[in-house]
Image (cartoon, rainbow, N blue to C red; front, side):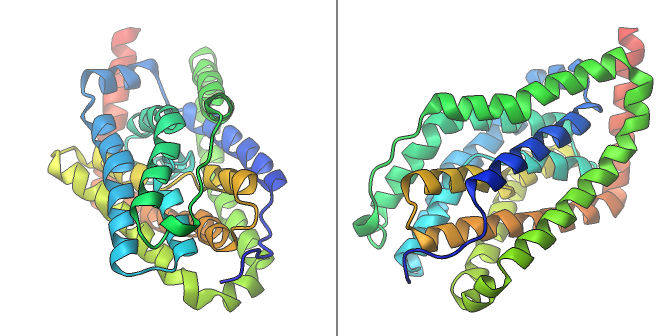
Length: 316
């Protein structure tokens, strides 16, 4: 496979995407209360299970799968890079749309994003080296942990804190804004998917047979792993679905930043990572819509609203 590929997804697009994610996180945070996080701290099963699946199981299984099936080295290394990244901020939005436990999802994203400052370069280096097919093209990389921490603060922590403050200070405004933000989130996702496909349509068609099913199978494996971890820990439906999204929706934007910075000519890796960024929106959004319409989804949402109401009444 050739080195450089004309993928229309540049660093400037990532900056805009981060801004959009920050705004969407603000919208999600309008539904959160401090009590939601207190419940997570009392029962940390979901965050711990998510971290194990995210940083221990997914990279290891990805390495073994690419080794066993002899995936082309550059494509395999791209899959290992994606598996080494933390859960993406989009997982919070997808969890929200799917009426699952957003508080669990946000806490998992925050913890995994901070852990990624160490675990992402470590897993990428470890499994890129352990796979004999990728070892030859693998070179060591260095990631500035402060840059990643700053990104997490800007697109997750800051808008989350502002959103929760607005919800507490102006509860009426927050209640009226929840539905418009929900609709806007859906529109942004659909628009992003449409633009990404249109900008790269010819390239995707030309390389379809080399990457499409790899990304689809890899994403399905990640979602399945998250679901199985939730079931193994006997989590409630809302928590299990939050873990599923966290493991299945990867921060491919971080992967692209790493590639543009350290591997600017690794076309195969960029193709895998860029298409992951498109496909996990399609699969995640589809799964979220199915959950939202399911009987379990409606019941979990009603239970969450009842618990939230009792918490607010008790706090008052």
